[in-house]
Image 1 (cartoon, helix red, strand yellow):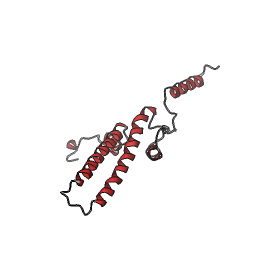
Image 2 (spheres, one colour):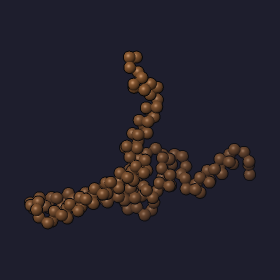
Image 3 (tube, one colour):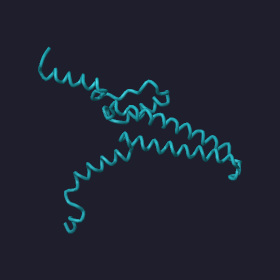
Image 4 (tube, one colour):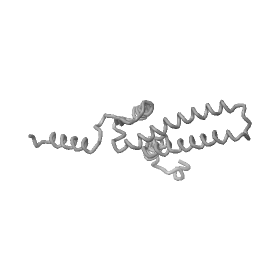
Length: 150
C-alpha cells in the first residue's frame, strides 16, 4: 500500500462514491421507479445540464420534477380533449365546472414545476441570474451615476 498523493486521492474518491456523490464528468442516473415517460424527461433535463451539475442529493427533487412534468402534460392533453368535446356546450352548462377543475389542477402542476426547477437551480431564471451577476461584476467598475460626463 502506498502512502503518496495517489492513495489520498483514491481514498477521497472512494469516500465520495460512498457518500453518494457522482464522479466528475458523469451524469446522474435515473432511479429505477420512473416510468418510460418520466425516464425520458429525466434524460432531457440531465443532458441539457453540464455533467456533474446534479448530485445524488438532487435525486428526489428531480424524480418529482419528472413525475409532475409528465402528469402536467397528460393533464394538458385531457383538457384539450375535454375542450374539444365541449365545443357546442353553452358556457352556463354545469359540465364546464369539471373542465375548470382540470384547468385549476393543471395550473397547480405548473406552479410545482417552477418551484422544483428553482429548487434544483435549473430554471431559466436561475441560469440567467447567475450569468447576469457574473457579467455585472465584471463590467461594473463605475456605477451608472458616477460615469456622467465621462
